[in-house]
Length: 495
Image (cartoon, rainbow, N blue to C red; front, side, top):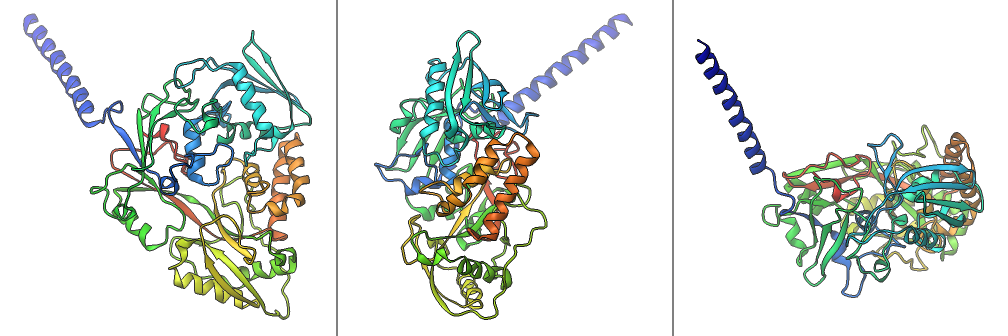
């Protein structure tokens, strides 16, 4: 009887052992080996690059594509994160604290560049000092930097400012604009980086960029893909064919997804991931057009879209704010105050729209009709250039801000020279200074709301619609770690 019981127990243990081995083998066979498998990303910016054009300008990220690529190539002192209770996870710094109203300290980790060379405290200091005079479009706080002190024994860096700064500094230091740049990066060479990936090869003739994982970066995970291929086909029409004919894993659709071609793509994609409605469409006024100086003309222009709403395509919603619902700085129950005029003397204007909207006949007719109701005889022209023709009164832009913090969004929109609202920068400069200096968090939030109201009531911009971001992807990957508010294409978080 004992022999039988022993044998039965032994057989059961052997059975469990083989079952466990079978599960392991099945897992290995069904899961791609990420050291051998590359993540294939359809990267639309490649379509616009010439052989002498840098893949990215770290000081002037005009497009979402550029900004998100920079997030994958650099890391700053911190990085925003929904996993960390502080709202930010360690980057170059493992700890940070405010010493007094004009000073912040950072405990620096012992890290390496992607080539294995140590990242030094002096390199970090030099990079932070560069932010003070850089033309980074999200940078405000670092403009007030006075000096940087290094404690080599404690591996700490102290930032001393010439005026009070608040916790908004941490958010600014989490942005891609504040990422640590290698000296090579300043020459448009990205083969050595501080961030999750480095560039291993560029072939703009065939429209491909290869990225390799930087295992020294604190943001990378064991599950992160070792290789990323960014590519764009020679013949853009290939994209319209199915994922099976032209396979790729990720394609973040560009704006104006309601058009026919993006809809074909969405229909053919194995999977798609939608964000909340986050992409704002708005008109900005031409700084070289004299009509923009008249607030009454700007108010009349805005009233056309408030009093006579345009007919929007399916999937896009009417919107009267610059920051969408769910984003910091959104105005709850806000109604813009517009003075209704008794009569509208006719004015001839020209507006500029992206070339992608040239075939959206119903939308164009609706825009003309609404503007006609308030006395505008409107000529619509099409061009993808960011530079205004002096005869253009207003241009349609799209913008996706940061869900956590709105000041960076305003800094980008009002950035001197390049920002679509830059002409009105002097009128908000005082509010910018108040937002960065005030130490009370509630007062800071209220000042940001005040800034949003000023933009709308004084018609520095005219928001008209909002739509969600959409990322198409293959069956073999998961995007569960991506923030549903903005769907940032952080390749190191793909599973």
